[in-house]
Length: 344
Ligand SMILES: NC(=O)C1=CN([C@@H]2O[C@H](COP(=O)(O)OP(=O)(O)OC[C@H]3O[C@@H](n4cnc5c(N)ncnc54)[C@H](OP(=O)(O)O)[C@@H]3O)[C@@H](O)[C@H]2O)C=CC1
Ligand SMILES: CC(=O)N[C@@H](CCC(=O)OP(=O)(O)O)C(=O)O
Image (cartoon, rainbow, N blue to C red; front, side, top):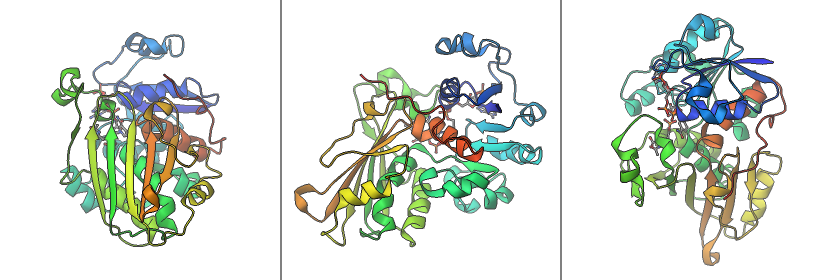
């Protein structure tokens, strides 16, 4: 059994880790932290987990206890993993960070977008960006994994096949993305109130969102050159889900886009290329560790339109984190992650 610790067990990604790990045959959660719920039993706080973690209670983060785990997930706001990851790695514990702390390779770029100095730049060279569809071999050898953000996962998986083969103009990419409200986390915020976010939809951070440098970093690696990307996130009145509508101008209109996508993801367990002409719905991935993709070329023109949907809390965070754990520990990559989406 892999002994698992979770820092940040009361947030949405923390409790999603618990839900998914309850079905994992080779992992056991032995430590779960919360500063605000210290001593409270997990199943008393989250009744959906009654019968799964009845002996487990939240405790305040403590390096000695966490360092006795085989792997620690950070499901915390940015900055927390910076402070603790180094000590845990020294104790021989693997670290899988769901926050943005180790996603950007450039510490100064990170400081610019996150508004504070990078807290552990010495760890950046060894941090592996945990997108299995790109970095599977590096993940196998890693000690420290940076799990991609939700918008970056949907956007990169949708654009990679086009950029890797140089099929589109990399200077003019557009990612028009919609997120459910759980993407904003569980902490109370006026914008997340039912009365504010319900029955309405809005774009935000149009002049620059912190996922922009992360997406560009991944797309640059795929294209082998810098890319021009306009990324516009939107808040939509659903609880879970990301819908990315991606636009790219083809440099060769004779290419069979459906075949390109099917071939790129043929052996990927968690990317589903839908039949030509499909329109994936966010509800088709709710609760599942899947990215469903459809590719279109409206009116046979020069524009490729890719539709990419994920559940932000699963393939966009906790499911992808467990996929990384499975790879890291040499397990079947799909262990604990095979549940079908919840529908309707
Ligand atoms: N929500 C989403 O869809 C996605 C989120 N992420 C990222 O995952 C991380 C967690 O997100 P989410 O679950 O939404 O966040 P939440 O705000 O819902 O939860 C944050 C958790 O972290 C704990 N925490 C807060 N501050 C500290 C601290 N200084 N030290 C230790 N623990 C702390 C909180 O518990 P307590 O205060 O009681 O200790 C709480 O359990 C974030 O970095 C987020 O950006 C990534 C992809 C998708
Ligand atoms: C709807 C919503 O607010 N979404 C969040 C992004 C989700 C997230 O948590 O991103 P990181 O993991 O990179 O922090 C936002 O726009 O800030």
